[in-house]
Image (spheres, each protein chain N blue to C red):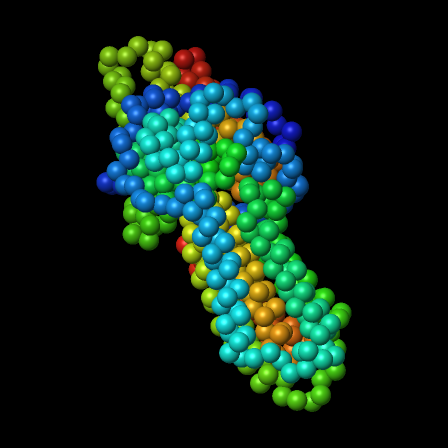
Length: 225
Length: 241
């Protein structure tokens, strides 16, 4: 291990490709595409973010707000809404930051931290008591709903960030997937009447994990430059 | 630690090379990345005028000035091709992948950020194109083999003097030793030794830390020096007899 290695010493090694590297200029580029400019890309990303919010709002208008939202539980809902949004902020900023930065070798952590952060905080602030109802039926129903809520923002994100990442495209897209899942997690808490910690973590939070996996395994093909 | 075994099978028209490398995506002992502008992929204050001109042309192209592309291509394509040539050892393939790289550059131009350094960005994209090519070649089941193209053809042993022959032998030794390096070590070595990137820029391209880049370059240097010394010893032994 020589982290203090003086890279100037690399010049001692001769260049076996020197004659070829000086070959005439490569022929003119044969394929060009009409592509979005920098301002066009910024506009696309704003449109995608707005589209994702409209998508969530449209679903909410169909599913309806949870009962009692305007009465005593408003502050509890606000907490449940803000926690996943914090996770969204962390994942989004990790996924879209320039260069590898301090996350260069910590991508798995940056993708895993938001769902963990959501899970632990939810466990800390949400009621734990179960009333003996059918846990899995409710959790699976909410899981299905959050998957539907995640698909729209994820598709919009893949469109807005297509060919955007020259390095670490897999991890960056996974982070975007986590952010999209977090958005759906925040949305569903405005509709789902079950505030218990386990239901929220399993039924609502799984979308973050699934979003991250979908982004990392499939989405990166679209976002890679 | 994640480990992905990558076979980089390079070459078309029957000319190909395989370098099999264990590809750890997370290096043990990697330390925090410095929070400098350069480390974030931004332009260094000390870049040479040629690189500054490339950065400016790319900026203009990203803003929508299509006419800047031809100038950008003329200035940057030789550098991209040089990187690809040193990675794959095949001039024809390097030319093809340079075209592919600039196709991708024009497709992604809107994502090129203001004040970012263009050459590391191009090389990152060229690296993606090279890896995609290697994956396709592996899927097709291309037979690995080593291309011995232009440099070998240039030299005619019958008409060259001993000095030239000795130089050529040295180049052959270095080429063979480069082939034996892992892809990681070779990339780090090529970027620092031949492409003139700083350690921080190479780290941006490779998606790792400057410390990891230095370690890879050091290992490559050691392997190459050992190969050169071994070759000199063999030659010395031959002369003694």
